Length: 256
Picture 1: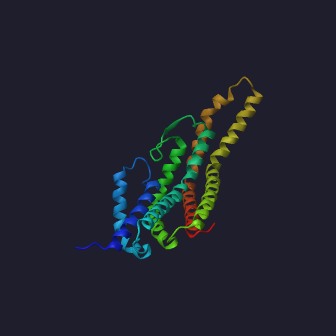
Picture 2: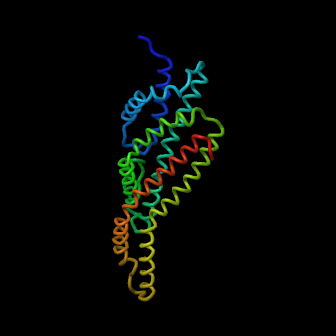
Picture 3: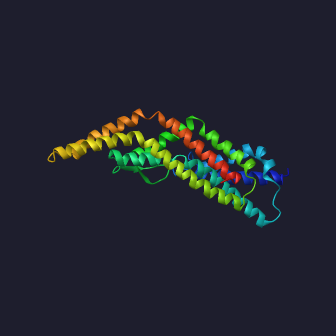
């Protein structure tokens, strides 16, 4: 039984791009996912998709230099796909961190199982909620479709793509920051109103510890407003994913 060299090379190429994508993807890129699980999933996806993607892979490189360049390119493209999708969730971390500071929960931190670093309560809550919504609306299928489409959109990488990647990453960062502020706006507005009211009380009655007494009210009203505004996160996830995918396609096509 002989091994088809073109098919084997296509499998290697797909496996490298898929492994790099899952390494930084929001679904399986966390530190809580064992490396052997990611490898097995990458192998399964590669085996399932290799026959679909093989026509766009190209011929087997005839020298080691071309092979190394091709492998490096696959790793870069895979990392880029996972990175752009992961950046869509930065808006919810930004919004949660801002709300923790506004409500008064910034001093309490817990370990984030995805990033492996401490994060504030609302930041982690919003991130995990956005992750659950992402999976419920078929975000994992979107990730696989983006992976397959990347071979049609970007067969090779050049200097034009590097400039486009830089431009689209910066543009996406600005959009994500603005979206994070918009997500946090309702709770932040309530916190501002409570701060203003406590300031007037403290001005009228200097002996009354308004800030200390009003802290529980600020936390309660902030969490109440957060619960009322939770349905809006569904639309925020959809918007952030659309922004990330648009920036990803522009970067793959070499469009700034």
